[in-house]
Image (cartoon, rainbow, N blue to C red):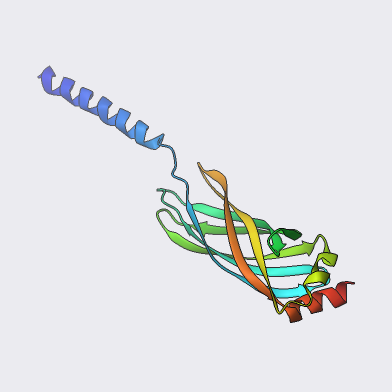
Length: 162
């Protein structure tokens, strides 16, 4: 009669080891895909950007988007400023979510806009990071979004700020 008990204990030990190994598995990093960046407002203080990112959480536990931050560049390399938005947006286990934020970028160098005021449209890049966290995962992932500032937006910012 002790034979089935021995096999049962042995099977239980193996099952416990497998469950421990699965519980200790390294979390998979979420995937971030840039979606949309839009100019919300332009002022003498800076520019407000509405930023949308697609985030896929491949893990068996929920995480949250904690922050979006980044630096705004025009004409390729001209740095205009840096901004950040704090969030607390949940992303479910194994789920996809759109993370939306409004990032205010304070002008670091408003005079950099002067040479661009004659352009009809000025391309910009918002090079940023999204900070994600959960019970066993904390990381920051990079992203980049591109768009255009119109002459009217540049003039509005330039005339009011100078």
